[in-house]
Length: 319
Image (cartoon, rainbow, N blue to C red):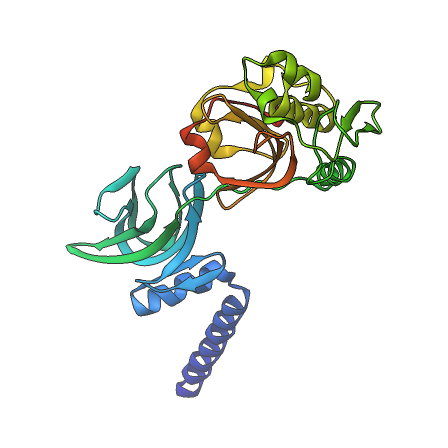
């Protein structure tokens, strides 16, 4: 009788071991994480498929857009969970304060927070509170938000057009006529213009000397000098002449300029054609910067400085 009992006890133990082994082999990642959390009466947090520890920086974003950084929090032996996104002053950001009733169970919660556009740069905190009865454990994770700097680069096809225009209308030449060394330029889309190796007379650039200006300065798309030149470049790149449909007068548009844009600034005194924007610096082509109708392809100005005297922009994206 004793041997029979021992046999059945041994058999049950073996069957139990086999069942546990099978379960452990078949447990998915989440179950293993939950099991580990339950074993230590703690928690496991993952971000981007990586386990992170409290007090560490788990991600970063810039404040030019609204970014989301999902966290997966595995828990055990907890009644409730509360997750908050806090700024450097400990204030909840944009109402992001969320709670769950866990009912003393083990499992996981996925949380996604966002830093609104234009938020102050710095280190934000994701605060996790796990409550078990009267006991609350608090864990903080850092979220670094950097200052947003706008960048916009031309597409390959647009860059090829820029290169072609720069070849046909070279740096240092003058966009004018009626002077020495004039050359007629015919672009591959049928547009024609002239360039020369001689500067215009500065006297002809004064507003009151309209007749002298027309005698030497080129005209295109309803504009002389810098404005006509920028509009001519835009007409070639856009495939059509910029119109009021694409015109934006809000100064905030200076923060998001793009390649192909035509910008009027300096209190309505100068026009440029945007080639690219990198880290807050606007690189552009223009003519007549020194009142001589000289062509430039290496102009640059900070978007912040341009914004101070911004007049309007013809947006390539609104063509």
